[in-house]
Length: 130
Image (cartoon, rainbow, N blue to C red; front, top):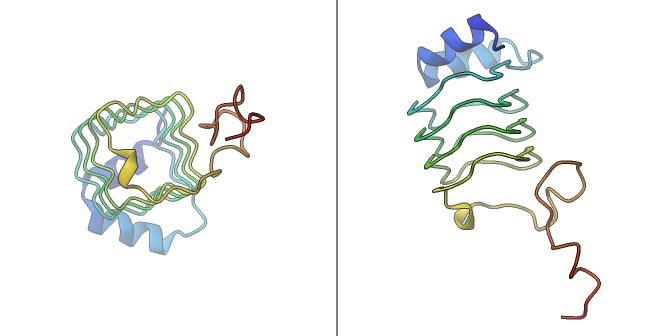
């Protein structure tokens, strides 16, 4: 269950959210299962946020910092992720239908070193010569 204070803050808008984040740099945002459907989170500081199971369908996450965020099982259906930073984010079991991950700057093995994350290569073909 998400922290009600954190949900209330993010629902007030990105400017208020980012100000709060800068004032509380050691607080890890708890947005577990939060309903953020269609939210405008463009430029939001969501680094290290717990967004497991959150509904981010149709959300605008352009330029958002999602580095080290836990998005396991989150619904990102048709979310806008242009210029979002997903480095070291956990996207295991996340619904990414309708998103365009091709335009993101993802390291080739960024998810391979962490359990439950998207593997960089298919393990069945990894040992085969190219």
